[in-house]
Length: 411
Length: 83
Image 1 (cartoon, rainbow over the protein chains, first blue to last red):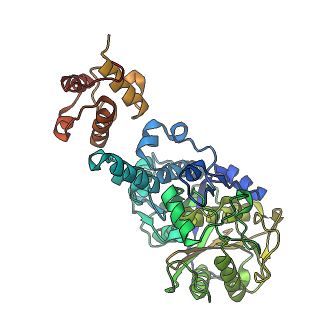
Image 2 (image 1 turned 180 degrees about the vertical axis):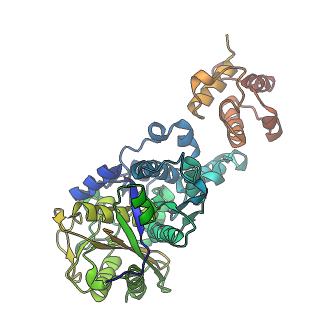
Image 3 (image 1 turned 90 degrees about the horizontal axis):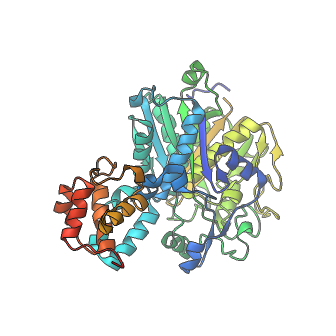
């Protein structure tokens, strides 16, 4: 099939996830199929009814970024800077010599500086408005992550943050691809970040009934597609990709992980948080992404599912995948390991999709012991599966009914 | 011998503001220490909490060196805990 699409080459990957700090650490973590979810003492001490989550293990902002950045940056920016440094170094691009005005930054983020909001709000209630930090606003506004990456690397092209809740990271990568396609940029630093595991935010998710209540066994709580799933496990993460036009990547002899070949977006126009039970919005996004890639449903080898482990999402997504793609493709949800990292999810999953292509290995869906009979998919469980993968569909669906689907290919 | 207030200011700058201890001297300016106007407001809040004196925004804007800062704090009766 001849593609009319202009793909974007991915030449760098940086990951900071609950599975580990760094691309290789995160990849081995998801291949292990072991969830790092654990009791979070900050939540437990605050009496939050769901007191476990998936934090990035051993993330020490002072050691990684220095005391000044540890103090002046909210955690969602800190995670993104560490991931972006890895991605830029990995790409072999040199920020000292690139044409800065042609380098864009597009990052997805659902919430912004949740921790800063809460700390400073408590301070105001306790000590009065005069004690509120002058850093409150620069630390919490979601767009600041793109601003900081611009400062970090001297990237002076288009610079923005996308907010489509749990689809934010995928929306960012699709938007970044479009900036290359229109010629507005030559290089885009893109991805997603989220650090919202605060007592207030987690209370909100718990009150919605969105979270798993498996407090007695957190590591078994995120179990996408399993018959005993009861909600998602919230996580924090950042995932960054470096995108360039394939001819530019070839010309400089860059190592290419694969391509962002298709992007499709849609809205359910149905409900704030519940997926459309017919999956029409998700279906349109998948079809749009495939059409954009110039590929047919039968070309798809593998799906990195949204797979949140909520009762509603997983069954609706499974029905949609069957209807649109038929069969003959494997499925995984890496959220079994990482938990649901919200605005970062679409980005880290795009990275895992590319690593699946590169390594020929599909990570298992953690905790999938007894597949829900309503989910008629070939879901990879227990151990990684060796599979030659050329085309991956990566789904992300956000609260608000916002759907973003990426098609990632070998070339 | 440096005054207790100077020692406290130095400690705040190192512990809370991430300033390298070797860069701290009475003559050092906030600019030398890579602290901007937002940091200065934050510093004034921290001084209020830890030394019990209030520096107004106008006063904070006038501060240049650590020596100026310590003198202003001392003139306002800054006390280091246990003194």
